[in-house]
Image 1 (cartoon, one colour):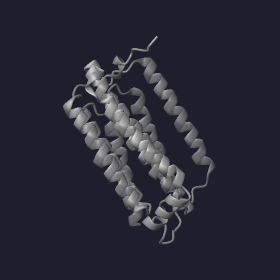
Image 2 (spheres, one colour; image 1 turned 90 degrees about the horizontal axis):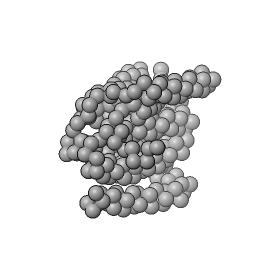
Image 3 (cartoon, rainbow over the protein chains, first blue to last red; image 1 turned 135 degrees about the vertical axis):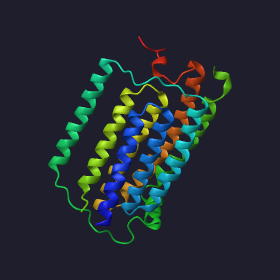
Image 4 (tube, rainbow over the protein chains, first blue to last red; image 1 turned 180 degrees about the vertical axis):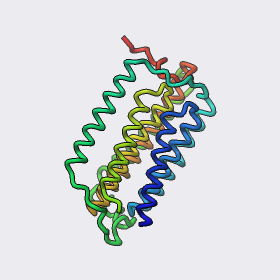
Length: 164
Length: 100
C-alpha cells in the first residue's frame, strides 16, 4: 500500500520535473526541473530494492551533471528566446513521438503485466552486484574505465583556450 | 498494487518528453539535458525489468549507462562551452557550418 502511494508520488514528481525541463523557458528553472526528475528517478531505484544505484543517481546526476550544467548556464548561457520552432520541425517531432508512443503502446499491450514479485534479501545488495560486476562483466567494466579516461582527456583538450 | 506495467509506462512517458525536448528546444544545454532524461528513462525500464525478473544484470547495465552518460556529460559540456565561446550564443541554429 505504502509502496503504491510512494510510486505514484515519485512518478508524478519525475513527470513534473521532465515537463518543467522541456517546457519552461528559463534555462535555470528548466535545469532545476531536470534535477527534480533525476532525484525522483533515484528514489524509484531505491523503491526497486537497488538502493546504491539510487545513491549513484543522486551523486552522478543531481550532484555532478546538474551542478556543472547550472554553472555553465549561470556563467555563460543566460539568454534564450522562447521555443519558436518552425512548422516543419514541429511536424517531424509530432510524427517521431507519435510513432514511438504507438510502438510502445503495441509492445505494452501485447505483454501481460505481472505484479512485482517479492525478491530475496540478497537482491540488490552491494555484494551481489559487485561479484556480478567483476566476474561476469569484468571486460565491460574495464572498458568503462577506459571510456571515462578518454572522456576526461577529451574534455580537457576541448576546453583549451587556443581553439577559438 | 504496482505492476511492471506502471514502471514501463512511466519510462515510456519520460522518454517521450525527453524526445520532445531534444527535437524542439533551441538551447544546446536544454537539448543535452533532454538526452540525459531519455537515458534516465531507459535506465528506469532496465531496473524495473531487473527487479521483475529477479536478475541483477539489468542493474549492471544501468551502472554502465551511468558511466557512459557521465562521460557524455563531461565531453558534452566541454563542447557546449566551446560552442558558446565561438558563437556567443547557446542557440543550436548557429551550428550551421556544415549545413548545405
